[in-house]
Length: 370
Image 1: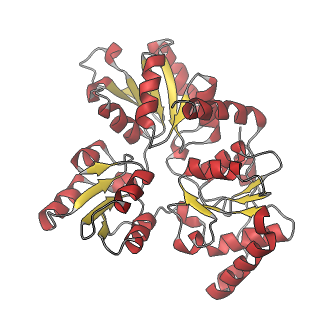
Image 2: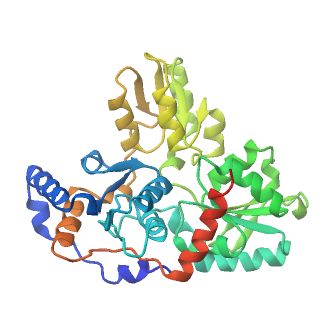
């Protein structure tokens, strides 16, 4: 088991002095510490982070990309990962032993990743084996815990990203008759459907009820994809009604969404793709065009600011930014850096050797698929 749970038992509250400090002072102190550590300190920042944090990031990107960049940076002794805990876990597994990965706020988690814990997964695997025998291969979205990645590695499976999900599902279907897709049912459903797998050929595993949900009027043997009942709390809030409203009031606007959105929303949108796809699509858009984007609010606002030649709004303008991702702010970033400066590793993320070996195996099976 990854040591994140152990770290939870030593959780400390943010000292009040950081709440009382001015923004200017926080910025000054962070800048000073960054300069002091130089190349020994590396701060990766996920696309969904606040602008106040992103300004201090050495690089920005998606979760796996940031973990890989952290691993490539051999000069850095300390990786202060501005993202969420599963991302910091991946960074720890890919970096060398002497590099230390720190998460500024231990409460910066991911509701989707938390919807599939290892005990639930092992229970599900046993029950599904009883139903389907040895015909299943597990795949997990990289937005999952190290333990779930390790489970997939141990059982012949792999990880997927939203960019390569199609390729990885294609690969998985050459390995076994059916697959178990964790933990995001929407990415799994949208990917499988794009490959010609019908909705009736997909089932949902409910980890709380410990049962399979499917069209019982059809033979059980027809099921090819078993979707874990999990979702992104941000992307699930985009709706077909929002798309219809935009098209009624702004017919010239193109709708661009992330595949973590529901199947109905993805089918109704003009385009769908990973965060990288969304960023690149906007970069290449014709000046003067209008876009309604269905993804995390911080990224949408940053894209709008970076591309004044376009009209960019959120598909759901009243939506809040990802709450767990936004737990990392200037206060927690400064706190972690000042602790580091004083010789303390506040919330170091460390994944044990066995978990790391199996999880990296799952990652490598994905990275080796060209």
